[in-house]
Amino acid sequence: MGDKVVLGYWAIRGLAQPLRFYLEYLGLPYEEKRYYKPEEWFADVTSAPLNQHVLVNLPYIKDGEELVFESQALYIYLAYRANKPELLGQNPKEQVTLASIRGVLQDLFKSLIALFTIPEDKYEAKKDDFFNQEVLWIAEKLSKFLENQKWAVGDNLTYIDFQLFEAEEILRNYKPDVFTTLVGLKKHNENFASLPAIGKYQSSDKMIARPFYPPGMYRWG
Image 1 (cartoon, rainbow, N blue to C red):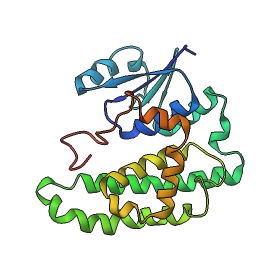
Image 2 (cartoon, rainbow, N blue to C red):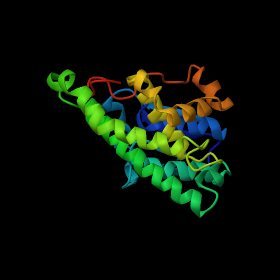
Image 3 (cartoon, one colour):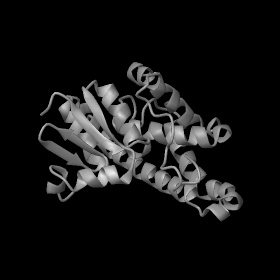
Image 4 (cartoon, rainbow, N blue to C red):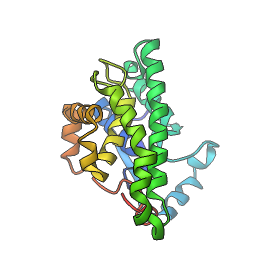
């Protein structure tokens, strides 16, 4: 293990933003390797040590000689690295609920990406119907589930809350009027934003406010 872990990802929010919140909450010393251009990533991925790993991908964590790839694996690795395995769920019920929310969130993120990648010449005409038919019902389902509890699995914070917060931030920025009607998501969003480590990070110069998605490839972000 190294003195600092390194989080490697593009210089956008994307898949890494919940991990940035997570690292801040965990209090682990870390630094970022932000890739601003594809050629920067291609130079690294074709060189040691990244080119020695079959599963190489973004985002990644480098911890001394240890390299970990794939987003969901990073949450598990970092929880143990910070001696906070409770963030993976403290009992079978929490772990099952966490997995269920993760599945719904994956559907939500996929629908949002499909929305924001509608061809440019069709986006204005289709965006509202697509949001209402393909995105909103998933958000409403999550919101209803969260109405009567503080965190995704109940009383205890887990790593899925960090991913949930990023989904909420996308919805809050894209459709602010709609987001205010999603009572459960709005309450969760406010609870998460009030965590001291998160508030401090969001007001720091380390925070990436935008873009959420790669500029030029997405209609919004």
